[in-house]
Image (cartoon, rainbow, N blue to C red; front, side):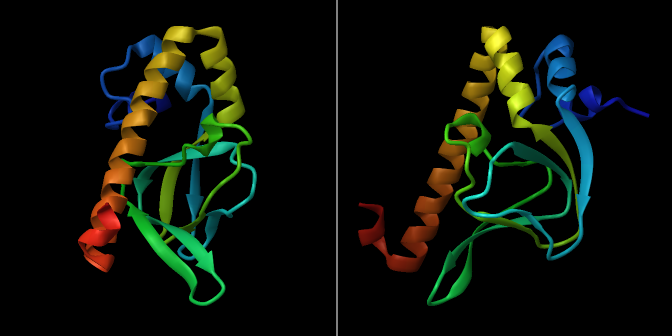
Length: 155
């Protein structure tokens, strides 16, 4: 049976990090589960957690009065859900809903921010990694906008 540090070290987000850093990060994590249709978080709510998906899929939804919940993106196993825990005022900007039953590692954002404050190298490493996640998601959103609205949306 693998430890949580060993488990998260297999994910793309944390791959290649030192065993000491993985142990520090894992100290802020716990295994969680959500049933199909269950909300992990709600737009405007406190973003005090992020999730590393082990199984299942999570839809990021934007609620509009005219159309209800619109799926912005679907997050797959191995990916991370959430970066709002990094930036004040630490609020979610979407709803996160389990599309299927989900098993994930939930990380306490305040715990991890505290560890990053104490260990600037760890903080910088995590910022680089989460920055790459944000860039990838923004590029994905750009491609989807072009699909929906044509080339004018990408300009």
